[in-house]
Image (cartoon, rainbow, N blue to C red; front, side, top):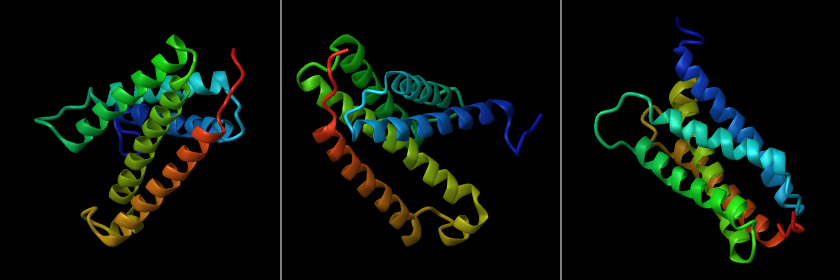
Length: 162
């Protein structure tokens, strides 16, 4: 059965991704005020990890850019999870946590923008192959926003010990 033109599994994957993005933006905002936001952070890490893992369950032949992004996100998420739950953000682990979490969130948003240009007719008309200037401009703005937010989060996120 198709829902919104998607199989139930694809819809589940998309919903996980949207939850990961929403919770990630909430915690990123919290980090800018040095708020640990423990429950929101757990929801972000779990939903983003689940997004990547379900992404690997789609059929594929050979190495694709999506698989490459998935591998990068898995590595950054594992580092963030280790920094938070094993090393409790002590010393340099605070920076590792913020940087790796922000990279994971960035790539989730990167994929959202790419999918929007591929699936939303008005955006697809602007960049049908994903290599046109409007697509590059959108992705460039997303990258700049995450670089700025990540820098600010690293400098501002100094939570008290749990």
